[in-house]
Amino acid sequence: MTTNFAENAVEITLDNYAEIQRGISEVKAVSRMSLAERVAYYREKYGEKTSAKCIWCPSLGCYISKPLVYQNSKLRGIWIFDLLAVATCVNCSECKHYCYALKAQKQYLFTLLRRSIYTWLAKHDIAFLKRIIVEQLMHENGIQYIRIHSSGDFFSAEYLAMWTDIARAFPAVKFYYYTKADKCFNFEGFNKLDNVNGVKSILPDGERNFDKPARVHAIVEKYARRGIDIKICPYHDPATANVYQVRRLNRKFRWYTVTIKEFPEIHCGSQCTYCMDHQYVIFYIH
Image (cartoon, rainbow, N blue to C red; front, top):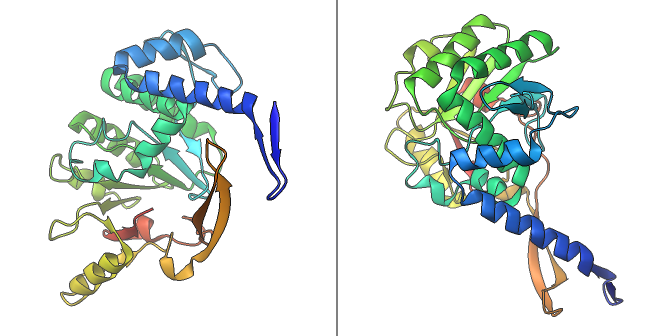
């Protein structure tokens, strides 16, 4: 059944709405599972071989996809490895309430399941995880940048050692990461590698490295007076926003007004490389 509203040419398909609601319900149900239950759920429902899931994992007893994913809407030309947001973050008591990576896990089932699979491997079969990352690096052409964790963080010394070994073995690849765990584990050996850059997610005086625009600029100015260079990520810079209003319909088919902010596309790796080269980068909340 389709309902048309001629005023703004809005079309709502109730069958599609029901399908969306079923998808949301599944994500919510899987989110409430333990890590072990979530892995079992994946193995039973989604663990068969496909063109994308081409790696047989003996310890899981199913097929999984390659560990490194090529780019997203923000990170262009960059390969990404993710773990579960918050669940692997050992120092996130404050930032978990603002975590953009957590939002994706709540919205997309396969994002949640993929991160769960690789979190399980990082905790229970790290030798296999290391092997498949190395194999992908050996056989994938043109890998220039790897972002370790657009979601998640370093959660153990053994896991950090795995990435240190991988980065040492591939000196032509630039590895970069953000962390709040630099006081929990010894990153000295990792950071000494010429092809590794770590961005501290906690600033020298203890502030988080993201905030509202006015606060971001105040923080940068404060540190500049002390000779500490903190770069501002240009992504979602409010000075570049195009602001306008649109009319939408709610679930009761009533009109309401929404203020929209559109930002020009800023692509990490092609238009900005702050995170590949600097220790401190601060972000606008988005």
